[in-house]
Amino acid sequence: FVGCAIGGISVGQVMRTIWPFYGGLVAALLLVTYVPAFSLWLPELLLGR
Image 1 (cartoon, rainbow, N blue to C red):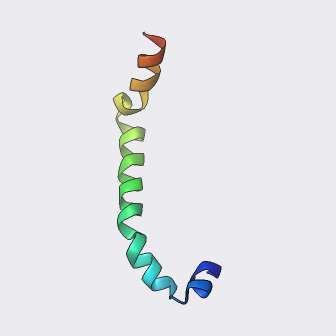
Image 2 (spheres, rainbow, N blue to C red; image 1 turned 135 degrees about the vertical axis):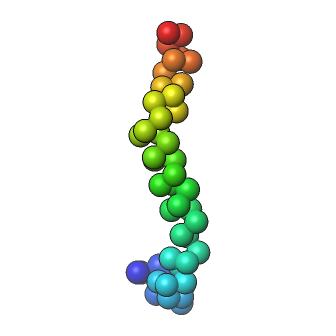
């Protein structure tokens, strides 16, 4: 809210702008949560198991 006041734009404008990024974050969260291969590839790569 403070950033919007300083920038002189409404919160609605900011939300419309960042909505696609939130969608991407939710999609990544769902992949990491429900597809084990996405969250386990780095430990397997580093530990060599």
